[in-house]
Amino acid sequence: MTLYVGNIPYAVKEEDLKELFQEYGTVASIKIIADKYTGRSKGFGFVEMENDDQEEEVVKECNRREINERNLVVAKAHSRKGYEDRS
Image (cartoon, rainbow, N blue to C red; front, side):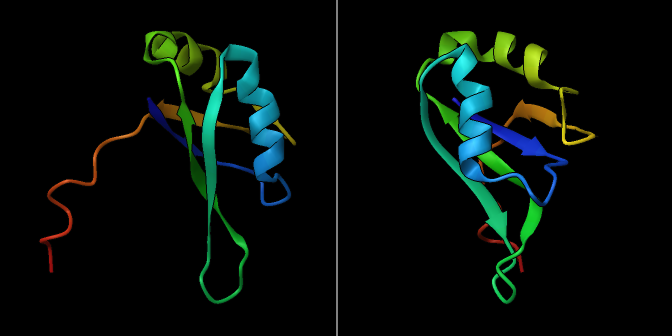
């Protein structure tokens, strides 16, 4: 399962998110999206968990969880299918 994680504080690194999400299962990958020119975090990213069965629990437990004085937004990520053809 892939989760969208938003409202990530700029100081938070991928390792920090991994530590948080590991409480709920095995983390397959984490990617915080960065500005291509500055390299600075854009404040959102994606976490891929190995076990799809825990999706609801992970979203419930991590959505609105405070990290560095900001509440994360966690939801199931939607497929990018169909977006490639937009101009």
